[in-house]
Length: 317
Image 1 (cartoon, rainbow, N blue to C red):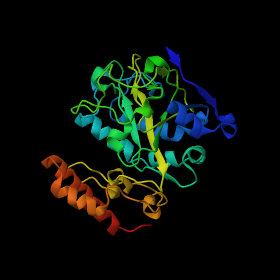
Image 2 (image 1 turned 120 degrees about the vertical axis):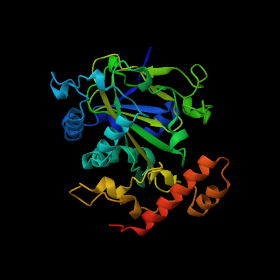
Image 3 (image 1 turned 60 degrees about the vertical axis):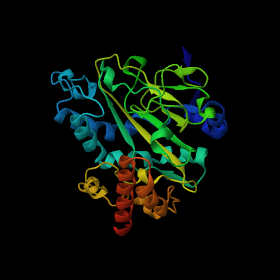
Image 4 (image 1 turned 45 degrees about the horizontal axis):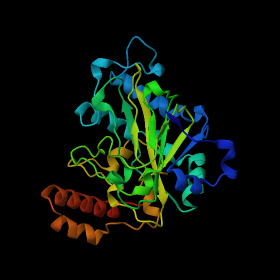
């Protein structure tokens, strides 16, 4: 087992972060955030999980002991309900805008930093194979420019038995790699790159990796829920896929739904103040809505187009 190359947060100003990323496809930063800076969001999520019955009622909620009778994963209706409620939290959307995170990402992408608005929460039950996320590249799902980056951040100490991420060193140099269409995963053993690297990832540590870097979750073999975030960043002068700005599902979910309970307007539609280059553009979306290969893709492009146009008409404050 090969361990992560590690950089201490205090050494960031003396390290060329771009060179590290170019060479290895990832950067493991130890102690970038103080655990106390995770607590507001962590507490909000724990309250939701307790309310929804995901935690063992006989244990302290902050221990994250899972209620196995509630086990579910992405693709299940219950998981979507809870995930959507986490996504609606104002603290959830504030987190990737933390000053230390932004300062660090600017070392990587330059001063023209764009924070993708659709951060992803990962709520992983223990000992549930269907909930394990296998080898993949983020660019497959996120699109846009390849020079985008993910910050994987656990909201608690995450030793190996709780299923932290591991990455395939150097795999970003091989472009997009073939996937199984049904899952979006790369076939096990067919990944191109160097060795898998792994290790404990603690509260306050941040694992950064390139959009083409192959990564996967290790199995959660504990009795606790694993709670982590995928925050994504890029330079806003590079193309952005419009699907990252809107909800692409068949439902009517909207940003106004998300903002319904917020107490501040500061981050509402913040990306409308940034001079983004959409790729595909609005004109290209309209064409794809008519010419994409499958009916499902034509419908998806039509939804994205409709929602981007709706967003352009709402207030930009």
